[in-house]
Amino acid sequence: MLEAVRTRARPYFEDAPPAHDWYHVQRVETLAETLVKRHPEPVDERVVRLAVILHDIGRTREDRGGIDDHARWGARKAGTILRDCGADAETIERVQHCIRAHRYSNDVEPATPEAKLVADADDLDALGAVGIARAFAHGGAIGSPIHDPALPVTEDDTEAGATQYNHFYKKLLTLPERLYTEAGRGLAADRVAFMEDFLEQFDREVDGDR
Image (tube, rainbow, N blue to C red):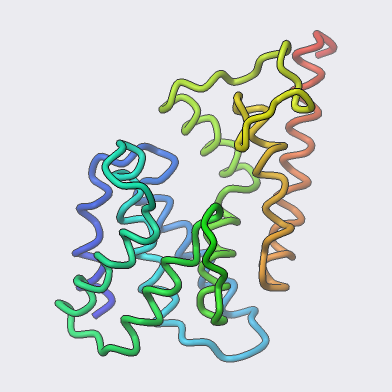
């Protein structure tokens, strides 16, 4: 069933921008595998993997203004895909909860170990070297400035940051605070340290020191 679902999910990413493309899904799946192995209690790895494969099938549609919430839309569409692929009702419900709960900005809290692992794996891909690359790829796709020295973070009243530089402080560096698993927090520490080093170098280059 896993490969059948993967085959059904793949077309949703054909025209996806780099920050949320199929490679993002593959990285999140790899991270989820690591988190499952390091989780102190048994979890249903099949539910985790199915949820990861399907978690962003609505993301491109949301980015283009077709829907308001890719997590809720994706959960509904995932239900259809899973039923078509022979999943039982309990599996579908558990996967749908993981998908609804993975999104950073919605009001659905992960209520199962599987949902927490999916959310953590997704957030981890927004950190570290990959997170830096994704941030600027996304900024380029939406036409957001890299940096505006006239708009420091302390004066930026937007929720996500008006520039990609500010986005690091407004959102990305706060992600570890919302991670749900010890394994996730362990992986996040090194990734955040790398980002902080990058931002320090960025500041020095902007100031002309390097």
